[in-house]
Each structure stands twice: as structure tokens, then as C-alpha cells.
Length: 132
Image (tube, rainbow, N blue to C red; front, side, top):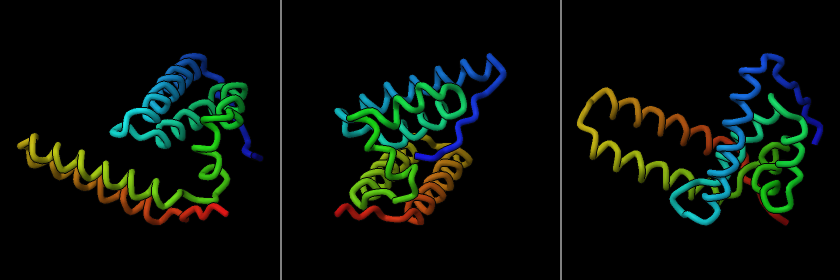
């Protein structure tokens, strides 16, 4: 994986990125066992945070025997598995739909629906990974 890792020099930002990265790793691991919590987005966020805060933790994550495969294909530009696309878009729309039902504020509904449409478009435009 030939990604350039540029660590943040500001210690406050670096520690914030490390904290967000480790929280994302924890949520990603929990997401492996809980079907309502997505794993891959949290691990991608962790990789992005570690890439900017700690070369050691970034390399640990992408080379991890269990966690690395969740994100390496995406980071190498090979795409997202079709099952992952369907799962993430389906759960996102389910949770957004429930949130829109529970939240009566028009501006909040508009923001949630706009976000869901944009994220769906982003996911759908990504290459679909075909495993041999």
C-alpha cells in the first residue's frame, strides 16, 4: 500500500485524531457483531485519522489480520463489495426514515434526506469489488 502518510504536527490535533481513530476502531469492531452498526465506514475513518496522526497505528490497522481486509480493497481503489453497498445504503435509509418519522422539524428532515441522497450517490458511484 503506497499511501503517503503525513502526520499532523500540531499535538492537539494529533491527539484528537488519535482519539477519533481509536473510537472508530472500537465502533468498527462492535459493528462486526451488531448488524445495525456499520463496520467499514468506521474502519475507513480510523484509517484516515491514523494516516494523519500515527504511521505506526495506520500500518497496524491496514495490515491487521481481521480488520485490514475490511478497508484495504477500498483504499487500493478496488471498490466496495456489492453486499456492502446494499447493506450500507439499506441501513442508512432505514435509520434516516425512522429519524424523519420521529423528528417533526422540516429543516432537520431536509438535512437528513439530503445527506442520505448524497451518501447514497457516493456509494453507488464507487467501483463494485468483484472477488475472484
